[in-house]
Structures are given as C-alpha cells and as structure tokens.
Image (tube, rainbow, N blue to C red; front, side, top):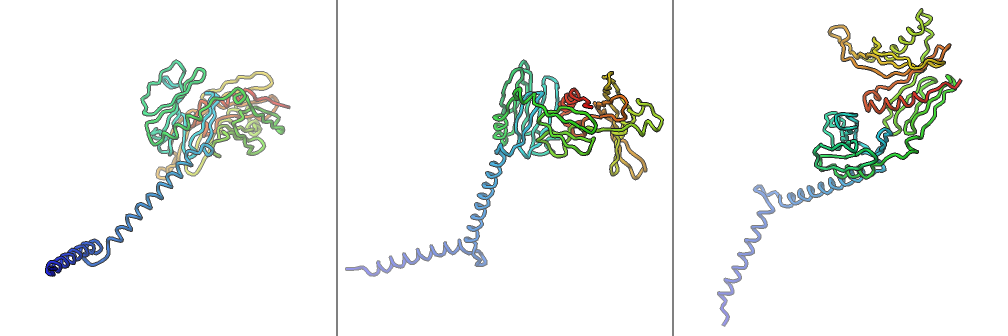
Amino acid sequence: MINFSKIFLFILLILSFGLVLSACNKSQETGNDGETIYESSQQENQEVILNEEIDLEKVNEEDNVDLDLAKWRAYENEYFNLKFKYHNNWYFQRDNLNAENYIAVYGFAPSSEELNNKDYAIQLFILNEDQNFTENFSFTKEKQEQNKKYILASNREEYQNILNLMFENLEFLDEEEISSLNTYTNEEYGFQFEYPNNIYLKKENRGYLLLRYLNGNETDWLISVNVENLIDFINGGMNFDEALDRSVQDKCSGNGPGSGISCPNILKKTQVGQNNIDTYEFYLSEQRYHYDAENGGNIMDGISERGPIFVFYINNLNNIFVFELAEYGRENNYEENVRILENIINTFKFTN
C-alpha cells in the first residue's frame, strides 16, 4: 500500500530545497538596495579583459614596428670601419675616443634624457684585439674584424631583441665604401673639394655650404664652408694678417634673444702653406653669455675652445675660404667630425 504521507514529505523536501537555491541565486544578483550587481560585475571583468587584449595588441604592433629594420636609421663610420642600424626613435652618441682601454664607447637610449643621464639601454664598445673587455653586463654580443673587437652590451632584459637585431646587422665597410668620394666644384669662386659619399651637402647661397650625414637630422650640420671678403677690413686700414684674424673672429660671433657668442682671443694660428695658396689653422677662445635684466649687463656662461678652423687664401684676391665644424659637429662625435673635416681640407684646391 502506498504511503502518501512519505510521498508528501518528500515533495515538501524538494520544494524547500528549490526555495533555498532560489534565495542563494537572488543574493548573488541583488545588493542590499535590490540593485542588480552580479551582471554589472561580470561586465566589468569582461571590459578589463578586453582592454588587456587591446593593450597587448598595441604592444605587439609597436614591437613589430620597433623590430622592423627597414624603418631603422643607418650609421656608418669609416674610422672604425663599421656600419649598423639603430632604432628609428632612439638616440645615440659616442662618449669617448681613446678613453682608458677603449677606442670608443657608443650609448643608445630610447629618450634623450636617459642618454644625457648615461642611463643607456644598450652600449657598443670598440676595443683593440689585444684589449680585454672588463665591463660586467647581463647581455653581451661580440664580433671581431681585423684588429678590432665590437661588443654590444646591455643590462636591460626588455631590450634584448633590439640588441640582437643591432648585432645581426653590425657590418664592416669594404674598400669601395671607404674610398668612394663625391666632388663639389664651385665655378663662381673657382674651388673644389671631395667629401665622403655618406655626407649630404647643401648649398645655402653662392659661397655658403653645409654638410651633414645623409641619415642625420636636418639640423645636425657637421661642417660649414664660407667665402668671406676682406675688402672692408683692408679699406679700414688693416693689413692682410689683421684683416684675416678679424674676419675669422667676427664670423664666430653672434647674438640671439637674450644670449650671444663671441671669440675675442686667438689661441693658436698656424700657417701651413707657403706657395700660391696659403692655408691657416685657427683655434679660438669662444665665450658664451646671456643678458641679465636685473643687473643690466651680460653674464658669462662659459669659455671653451673653438677649432680647428681652416682658412684658404690665394694671392692677389680678397676672398678667404673658411672650413670649420658647425655647432652640432663640435658637440657630437667631435674627433670623428674633425677627421672628416681634415680629409676634406686635404682635397681642397683652386680650379681657376
């Protein structure tokens, strides 16, 4: 015989269990004020995950751009017989030449602030083959060519991929790349000279030229060439030597908004040519100052040496031809830029 009381109790038990589950679900879906929170919380979690996915895609996209060698900047140096590419948005400079045991030290950083603070992301050391690399870095790559060692180093794990790519495209110039030169001829003033094929030459006017690396920034001028006329100084009563000195000193002087430069003293003047063409080498004392409104006068900011400045003069003419490092050329990779300047000077000649 069927026991209806037991069945009834079983049904009540099932209904009670269903009410408990419903209450639990309700407590998850509503807050104290009855507002639905479970669904919105789930939506927030989805948004976070979505944002993370977008950020990751952005990072991956940036990494792909960073590691695209076709967009990197190229650098060549005949003195060290090497060429390489570096990150298109990064900064680099050469710290030292013949410093301690190193021939040269280059620093690379993703910002100019890090570069100026010497907090380099990557460094390139160039040593003689008989020198030992004594620096301690977490990541290093080394190549050797002829009598030099080239070592890329970093302590920052996040730049390993960039370091590896730089190492892979670190190459050495062949004889054709080293010896290839361009020739500039100025028919109006009758002179010419040769310059490396990795240098860009810009003609500002008839007697004013600017030279920089092909891959350099538009304002990173290494060398300037000027044709100066001495007639005003000579007509003012100066002899040739006085007019020459004054012209070179005046060319260095300039004033800007609230600041200026002057070269009141000649530190060194050497005449190296005695035939039809005279060649002079100058070093000047360069003074930088700014105007102090409170004191009503100029305040000296510093004194430095400016040079070498090379001047060519041909007898019976009033023009002089002045070759010197531009401001960027004096402040960056000075020794290498002097070498380029001296090579150009060695090829200078008059054509008339």
